[in-house]
Image 1 (tube, one colour):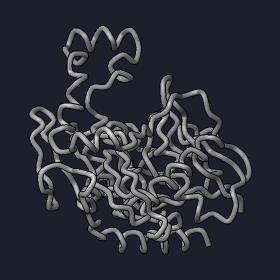
Image 2: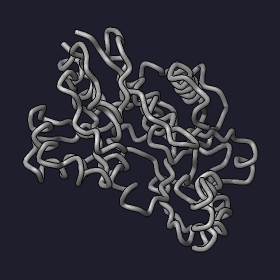
Image 3: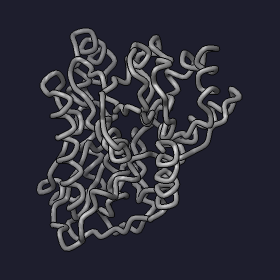
Length: 322
């Protein structure tokens, strides 16, 4: 049997390293990698039968769904976004998923959506919860604090000025004048000292500048950094979930207010120490004890609620690959 690993189509301006982190989570279970298969082009694959772990976000290219019959899918940590679900759950799409049921779903929203169509589905959590292979001894943990894409759903230059059409639209609707909102809201719960001394990391680098191999190297480097961090503060689930797996103290910043975003988190958010923000006012609540603002001496202990999900995922994937 041949084994494949998911790669991803970029948009015109940037790509999401979190996708590659998800593929690294799948890679650790594979005896070898014979081919890379692009998530958006699975229907176009023709060749030797290949086993493929189908974890992650599906899909931008709904016209190319369903995957080829030459792909033997392992459905765990599968997320069907609400924007794609109507097209993916065509008669053909439902038949495909029923053929490969039960479908292990990354979030409860996906499981419920599939079950409503008569597809046997269940909640697994995300495969990145199994990335404890990157964990280091606490003696190797340094004093670095990383702030990774906090409140990235807020207006930011690379999205507001993505192209001429969007630039005009965002000026007319006022979005372009809200570029300072993120920093204003962050200052409400993160101390000035931490904002000045922490290392800010962007998990959406420029697109069309890196090979797939270089993207995976970038993802590996980030995991090694997070593994040794004193604290990670992030709005990226594919930073926060690996941190849980690696035992790195992490605070998830939840400022999302659209269902496109929130449906991804159903069943996942309760795994984190979390700050929930009203994106309009900046008012926030924490589900852990926070005295004042997050500062260099803030200590949080992860909730450790993820272990049952991680262990079940490991057993499920191993059984499906044997």
